[in-house]
Length: 112
Image (cartoon, rainbow, N blue to C red; front, side, top):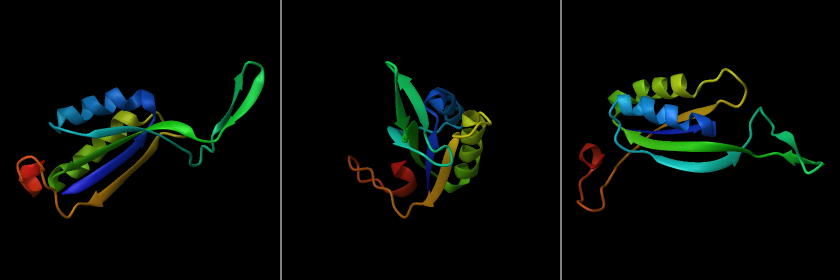
């Protein structure tokens, strides 16, 4: 099993969700996060004053899926989230040792 963590632009969430639904991926966790990379934030004007916005709003998507789906899921996320501009985000793929569904006690693939 693999855990995929994707940091994307907020307005791309629905497109990514739709793309992952095409693979019949059943669940994901979505969190509003803030951060910066090469983008290094930006300056905003509010009521005549300038504010340095170092941390840019992003969306973090987390999903755990079988290994055979991981590459296709990553490809779908890239395709749906890409704008071609700086700040499109990052994807991390991590190994998962064990999964347990608390309610039933099912483990690993059955727990997904």
